[in-house]
Image 1 (cartoon, helix red, strand yellow):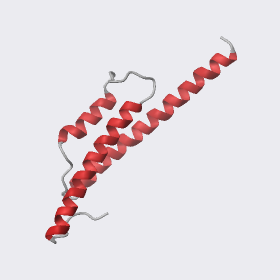
Image 2 (image 1 turned 90 degrees about the vertical axis):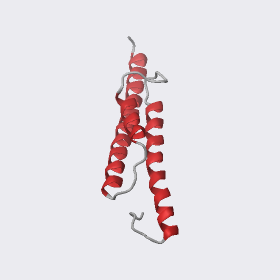
Image 3 (image 1 turned 60 degrees about the vertical axis):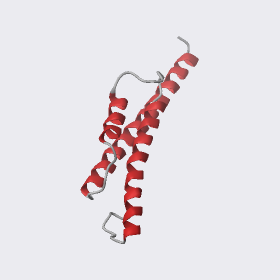
Length: 105
């Protein structure tokens, strides 16, 4: 193989590693968010959202087979958004009721 082919292979590998790093970072953020919400006594949303996102990332099959983790990142972002929206709904409800016991921020 010539040097141009190796350069393309290395570039593709670097992009795949970068996407994997983003997916792992989002997975860690998802786990931390769920843990923080549970510690604060706030709802974390349906359990299947969390575990479904984790399983989708770890399973070797994808809906969109690709060398990059775009679909995995999308699933993790949707799960994180779903969990955070549950928290925001609870905060809005408590503000209306005036109890103010939920975690702020």
